[in-house]
Length: 194
Image 1 (cartoon, rainbow, N blue to C red):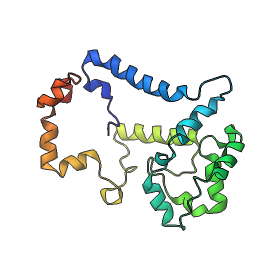
Image 2: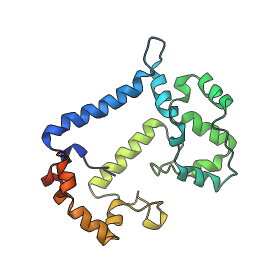
Image 3: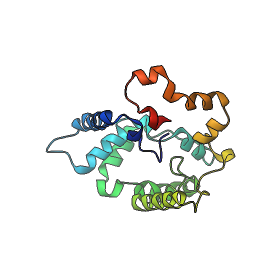
């Protein structure tokens, strides 16, 4: 929801450090589980990726994939995890192994764009990052708006479309800085919210 906005700009100056420390503490709490001499650098990514596997792939990606081939739920089978972890981390890190496997089993699935990025799932981490940066730079200088799906192609509307279609929500948003409940939290800068 805050893409393109630095959320700390909405906070009172004395709350910024506290908010940043809170985020850092949350990450450190998660990472403590996988610290120690026997831990490889890639173990941290594996843990964060598969620690909560139910939220790893979006439901929209699964529906899209299901339109091309029958669904097969093998992802939670321990033999699949064993095979995954038996593969050296440098090979399985990122999306290369996944894309090559899909290319062998069902290449049509590589035509389904990632619901989070709207880019091909076959892109390496480096190419994905570069494509995202390129798209973001073009968008910021006004050269490329076409990377966004149209409203009818999206699974949910953009924030500005939501506000434009709801007078009630637009009025509430405009009055956020005047909200007694929000101001009692003493977290937000009312001028920044305005």
